[in-house]
Image 1 (cartoon, one colour):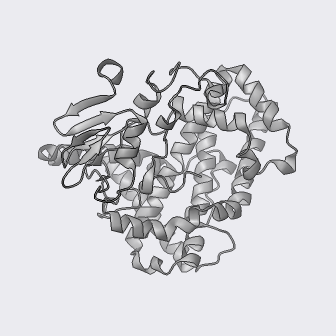
Image 2 (cartoon, rainbow, N blue to C red; image 1 turned 120 degrees about the horizontal axis):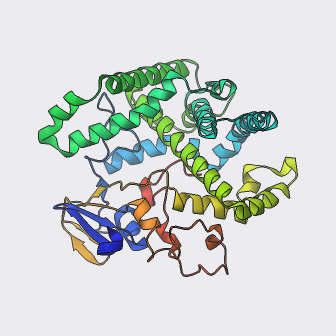
Image 3 (cartoon, helix red, strand yellow; image 1 turned 30 degrees about the vertical axis):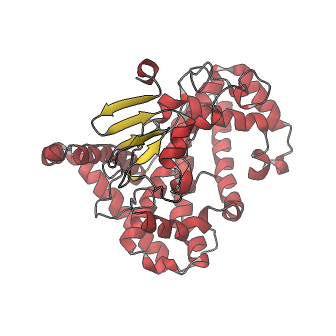
Length: 378
């Protein structure tokens, strides 16, 4: 639609879609002076089964700030350094499994393996104990329920969007979707309860250890609020990462020249140099990651905000209060006004002197921006 109607598209009576870098700043940026923050849209971001709101769905600015302060220590640079051995350990298991299958000439599902790895990592970080998915190369019923919960969230969003039809939509929701959502919640609640009973130090730097060590505010969160956040971490830190890795693997295999260049850059390092810190310094690797996020964004849709009382100015125009505004990722990343050759996989565009210097690279914000950006983007 944006390719037909331009950089701003009216999707409905109270809904506007943008694709420009400035729109990101005006929609997701912080409030300043008399300018108020655009809050999370209540129809887009709903509560969990028990009405609890996580860090990602909390519309109230002060409550969001309070929750973010609790969990920030678990997602800092220092935390990532502490968690590195755990992450690299699971990565080593993944590499071993892929090598064994390759040597044996066996066909295998790389997407499933990537999901196994991301869920193993996140479960260890969110609950302090492994799931053992990679060892079995299979997803457990709980993990399948987490993936299925995406369907429930979509149905719930429809019910919130069309309130007059909400009862009918909920009544028509498949039984297995409802049961899967309840199973996911119950299992998450039990794991949070079990983790808290073990105390602060369990010998590994999981989210709760790092949060409890650095703040006294954890007591302000009820167990159901902790469960809501644990569920959010398991959703946001797993399937999305596996989706990006799957998409990027596909794109690199379709472009062997880029694959070879990436292999040469990584293999120039010694084994002991393969650390997260050193990986972050590899220009072509990071160019590939950025381009993968652009071409194949894990969250391609629009996550709407609502303009505050009195309205806000977006891209130089005053927008009345209560208007839902957003930048849809896929549309912004594939629009020719933002990126040259928008539908092509060109990692070099993120490197200087590649002929793509005119790209509006600040249009790419897969983790959003501002005070409500993704806490786990590192």
